[in-house]
Length: 303
Image 1: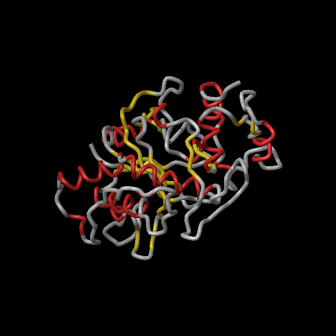
Image 2 (image 1 turned 135 degrees about the vertical axis):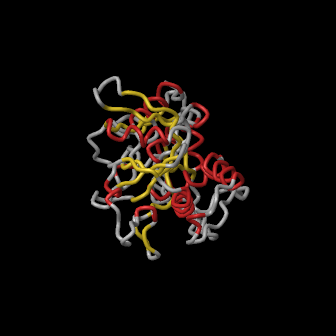
Image 3 (image 1 turned 30 degrees about the vertical axis):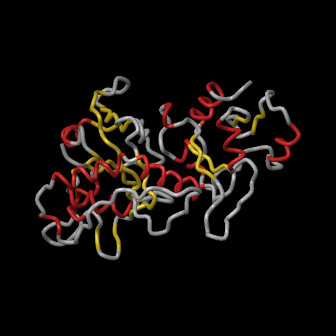
């Protein structure tokens, strides 16, 4: 086992769905197989518009030949392991390359930086995770949270530090912690929606700087919903309650649909913003995915 970097573009020609699978050609098979059972990092090249750099991590469950494409393979992602970073991590920061294993003997960037799949040193992985999940500018929660597990501080010269089981265990606990995942999910969703309720259009920040809005899953985690922005919406407490109980739903065109079981239709209609549609993220990449909206309509919405 070992860490790896998987390069992914939002406009990729490959059959990628980062939370589910990653498609790659045969030439990268050996490297990808080394990552089975371990955590990888997704990287978006800097030449891509609105590049996120290192933007997420996930655990590889297995590698299989792609049944739909000869000579191609799929890295299947462990369910519920995909975790987008609260902070996009750049390829290069003020203290140099984040992925220091790419620096060659001449002090220059190695050609390996162009490889779609490449091995990633443990210390580089820790550095990316620490920066990606850093909570130096938290969006305060509506309720108190238990302190999340923290990774040991990594010094710049830790490249040759021997493997420590305890560090590995703490890292795994951090990446799978429901507390950490909820915190990151909230930050990503509220940032995407500018802390504004997608149903009412109201943005309220209290005197303590806390956003009075929830990060709601469209398809709940307990029913297989991933912690990704496309499976989330920023909702006020009342809108969240109605959505979870199937009193409102969202059509694929983002129209807000009201259940016929609502006993006070006029009041509910008054809560919905004047467009009658969900106020989505400014970046279309964060738009609710039709697959999750359909799941909610089929399994939660009261017709």
